[in-house]
Amino acid sequence: MSIPLPSHFFLIHGKTGAGKTRLLSCLKSKGQPVLDLETIAQHRGSAFGANSFTMGQPDKESFEQQIIDALLKAVALDYCFVEQKGNNIGKRRIPEYLKEGIDDAMVIQLESSSEMRIKHIREDYFSHPTCMEDAMESLTKLKEKMDPILWKETYRMLESGDKDSFIKSMLEFYDSSTRYHLTQNPVLTVYVNADNEFELAANQVLEFVQQKIRTYS
Image 1 (cartoon, rainbow, N blue to C red):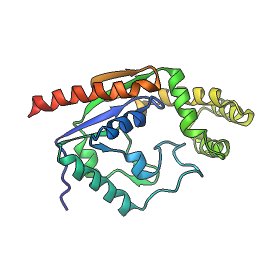
Image 2: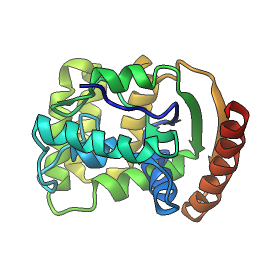
Image 3: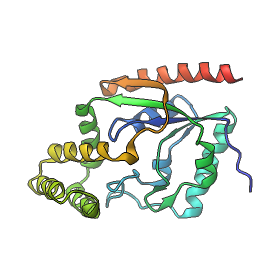
């Protein structure tokens, strides 16, 4: 089966908590072609991406069909926005044809302050009743990947209920991981200093992308 792909992918890249999903949501609200892999997968794509508050991940067939449906809509405009992800989102694997399709994607880098990133993580991961238990369970899965002293420190932060210190420590851990480093040079970098600026950032992205599309037409 041949899967139609848009000619141009724009990859939204940024550090954990920068607000990539928020930017994609703004673009989607403007009628833009967005492939929201986290929403389709029902998983945020990290060790902390699943919790008892989510509905569970779709089966493989449903996951891949939703991707195809989103791509079919994007083909009409011949471009698509997607958030940068690894090979897997939880238990669901990104199809090979999609990975190949975005290999040459143009990268849009999203930058925001450490304070904003902590705020976003707090809102996204620590706003449901079982958040602390879920975070402890997820942290346990990372025990073999983290320095033992760092792991014990972060676990004690959770035990004491110090969410912000825990989030700050984990952001530093993820920032230092090579898997999160940008491998392609961004064609555009947008800066968001407050949540009410995502609308402005989306407009900036759209203006730039439309110029790019005209150039390649």
